[in-house]
Length: 261
Image (cartoon, rainbow, N blue to C red; front, side):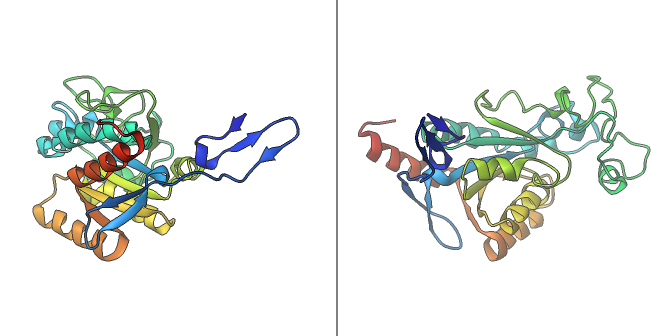
């Protein structure tokens, strides 16, 4: 019997034996990336999709309510929907990392609350949006749900976060280590804020980090995008694009299965 979340990090147990060898086949994937092309193991990879939720990406969400250009945050929807079926066919875990705060906001510091309500007179975390009576970034509310247009499925993994980084005060690192993940692909919004903070923490924790440029977006000025891409390539990992990842995975799947996707 297998005990474990994935084949490559599982024990096989019987009445007389416990096999802890964790020996499994690894499939190398060639990926066009910057500043260098990379090779990663399909069985050791996962995709983190960050904050593609109604408050940031939908009309009448928090960003739209306060006058922000939420349409910019919707640009990852189409490339992600092209990518997700290929990832699932390749058995690569998909994790949705969204703000999902406690109703009492007991674990949120004043500095965190200030970001979303800097004057104290606006609509901040946990406050009710006037048009839809949903509470901003609160777990269980419409505001915190993945946008309907994205292909989120029940078998995916969902993690609530409470800071810009998806690793702070969450089980994300434990989940990834239990899945035996080494390489993380990053997508979502905002590229220069929550995506970047999560990617930086992943790098500090020892993960291999690849930012998918066309699956990430921000409402910040363009120079913030350029600075993020520069810093990721210079300090924290690599950047690539959806089509390059799909091409690499398709080649590997065709080689394994011997038929077309």
